[in-house]
Image (cartoon, rainbow, N blue to C red; front, side):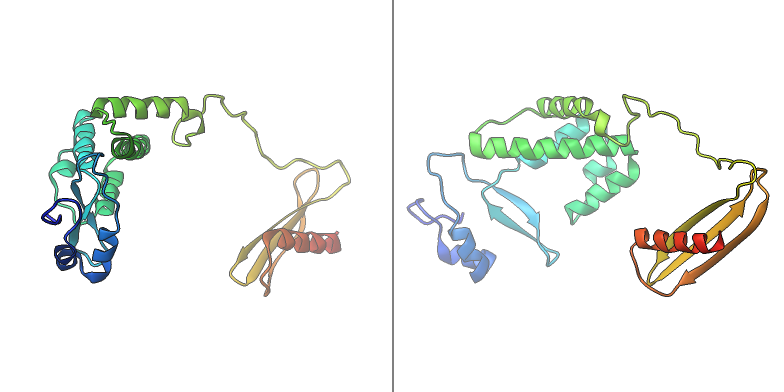
Length: 225
């Protein structure tokens, strides 16, 4: 118990012993809402690789996350495993699930975060099933923008191929790429029958944007022509 004997504030000495002087001052500066929700504790991971407690938020997030994952039938090893960092848990889940499932998983976590805020600031605590249904609805409503889903409006098939020039005309195709501080380019000249009349490739020892690199290889193509 980090409150003083009168229960109207925090015991600065106890807080400093638990959190240290610097963090303890910050904890003591957190407002206490006497008519608000009951003050509880959650655990969070700090950069030093150990756990400490922070006054303010409840364990509702953890309980709801577990209820949601059990409701959706996630592999039990992710529910019963011991993880020192939350990010390690999320990474393991991402390796196990496919792209669509990971997309839904992140959407669920985002909705749990919103539900946590509603609980803290509005005093409204949603059931795990309600949060899941809200996340599922959000995924369905916006799946047109989701790259892991098939598009609602199918893309038009575009066939890309070399187009023949007119008889008696040579066509020069060129391209360029950049790597580090060098620009690499190549070009080829062909007639209407596809016969190659010449070509060139090389590099320029100079760093430049890809647009400028393509302009330079176009100049080289004009010299070849």
